[in-house]
Length: 157
Image (tube, rainbow, N blue to C red; front, side, top):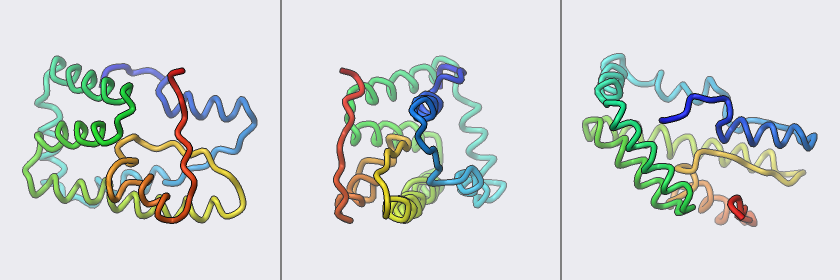
């Protein structure tokens, strides 16, 4: 990705919440987040590392621009498709299938359980990576199926 700055989306959302004296909680710990990669064999991790390091700066910038274009269009299905295409083309098919299940589907299941628990007695504002939102197993669909009211934000107006 392009910018190496503290002013990424996560930081900006947390700063806004803190400015409004809102409680900030995680629905996933950093240990849980990185456990996905830790669950891979060293050979699988090496395959991933080599694939990422093979990319040129021009390719990385092109990938970043593709994701940003999709992000700004607010088309969640397209964001997930682009993310999967960009990541999937780097890796052997079987490894990508394994990682996709662990990175997206399994983490989404855990996040839904935590969201349900945290939301029992209060309203929540939840921020996650956009690729976690779309699809049948995405957070939005699972929340709707659980009876949650979903209200999209108009971030660009």
